[in-house]
Length: 470
Ligand code: ADP
Image (cartoon, rainbow, N blue to C red; front, side, top):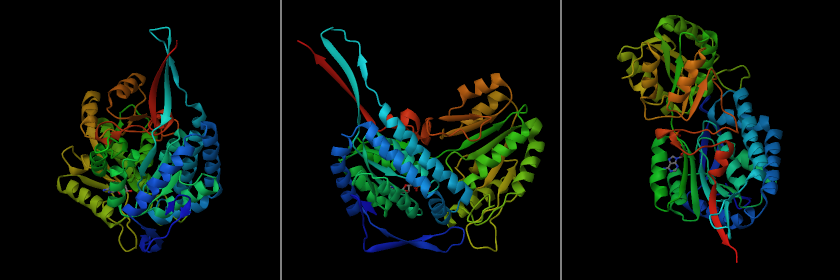
């Protein structure tokens, strides 16, 4: 753990398992409430001076850290692959994206402006200042164990906040690598602190300690709701990036090669373990057979295995429980009439939590897979007749994070863009995420945005000042 600029050891250790081999990756020291409290105190102390630096100076440090991250890109990527299984080429891309968030927010730190308002009384000067909210508690998941850290701490530190981070229990070494870069980049002590260990006690300390002014969380909707309830006690601000159930709509006028390739990208990247992964593929009835056959052919050729091998396209799931969840959804779907076009079972005879890339046809809206986030490499195909029908069905979910729509009709694109109840819409674009755009969800997919200037303002308070002159 990294608290107040020092690496801390505790009396307790936890073993980290490689999901591709089920072997030990290593051990980390873990703690709980005590370490969380120490870290919050350190962040509290550091806030006094960090907030007083100019945005320009804070930004220079963040850009330096981004450079430090890129110097050890390969090493961090290996840690990602060993801890959570994604293919090494994807892991390298994640590290680059993590650095890009720090760089962008480092540059943006010098562009935080206030406002001067017109006064009703000409003797008054009315102004709005933007100031950091204070100490923040950040909780991150394992599926993007490096970039989720910088997507939160980049804007928080740029804004002038100081932070305590709790990473996911399966990917602590990834967080340690990032914090080593913080250290090498010259981040002053106490500005960012890393606490690894028991989620409940660290989370509870973050939400019950009145020094903490904001909780920023990425993870399941269930834990997000719990944190929001607890954060209400001290009226802490919250940003929540929660679950998703992305529809991927393919109209008969779409470019099918492009749509198939894009389903592969959005469904099988990270073995389907992202909150913006495609969960429901809606294909217009007239192209259903052609689409599912083409998709199955491509899916069948995906190279699955240990992500450390350079040409692997899909790695394992994170753990045995994840594998069981996927198995359960597929079993329930097939029992209710869905058919397996390709895949449909775990990969047996090898170590590791591997599930075969799967395409299901004849899936219907009443099935569990149509409602519950899959977080696995299963592509269920649903069919629809009309545009209005598919809009209603796509929106019929408590989630509202990412949506994809493939069509070559411009007017339809515009109608879809307006009517999909999702925080993000990719029209003929399977990979729209960039550091300078707002990422986030509607409905139970979350509150607040990460990325872009919205992401920066999430960590700032507006202060209104009126000066009456003599
Ligand atoms: P997942 O199922 O994808 O792991 P979670 O929501 O359980 O999603 O985990 C996301 C993050 O939330 C992880 O860092 C995890 O340790 C943390 N977490 C889980 N339970 C709690 C809790 N009660 N309080 C605070 N953080 C928690």
